[in-house]
Image (cartoon, rainbow, N blue to C red; front, top):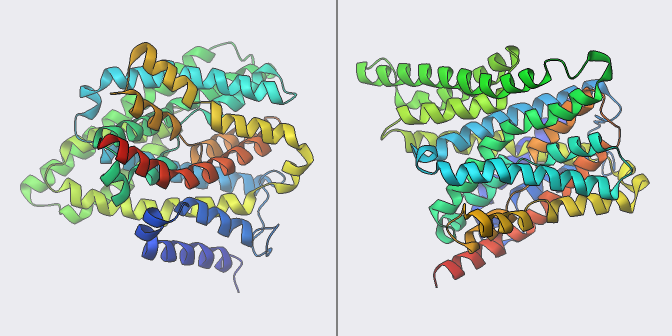
Length: 408
């Protein structure tokens, strides 16, 4: 028996079962599909049945696997987010997005860093790093909240779109925030020299290169349909390949691959017309089911429960405060000051459902590979687990409540 057969069978079997009953779970259970996958991972991991053994905290090969697995999952998720938005959405809603992404992201970063520093005996730079890692809204968990028949019935399209847009964009914008404290920690490489130019290229290069790739793909896609040498059925393969090309090629050029994927998807979205919706739904379904849910099984397998217990209540307090306080109070304040959302009810819903997930796991693995503190991995992994549990339990009842209040 190949060692790969056990995790493959577990992942495939779990995804198959959830696919068959997904509608019932979202409508009747106070549990998300991600939460079910997390439970499965913990059950088969080292502290459960012991069928799968992975330890990214101690094994560099395991760490590299986690980093690349979450990186690819994140890229496909932000591509799906870009394609799910109405064409021209960013242009029509630039003001609200700018408020959410600039002061909103900055406030979350500062608050998250402050909460980490408050509860744990860590330096200011490490607190800034931890804060940057948990700042972005996770597109995988956000997608599970704003998609499906229940969300479509209870949550206005405007609200679903703003959560999707934010989760797609700020996952890429988080990389410069993560790199900034890492560069300052690296005293042996003269971190201050050229650092700001490097960070600027991470964003500007991603925007430019993502636009070029998306524009070229969209042009060929459009010409192919006009002249009959392409088929609508090829759209799923096109979007998948574009996501991987943007992720890899832009990263090779030293820019932000995740952000470039979202930009490429947004530009490609403009080239699609009537055929876009049905074909995109196929892409979304493939991504949501087959490619993103297994990452939560992986999270359950690699959860460093022993380290959590050793670090004790300060770690639990830090992780809990990050989940509960890093976002909602600040977004309610932002709504009072600048009104990026349509009303306070929408601000409260979007402020609460800003989950921490795959993006945080990717950036934590990235930071760990660059010799960040050993406390970082236990902190981020526990925070993500709590996020999956809290948002998984509250998604269905709060979505129903939002629908009832919106209909009044």
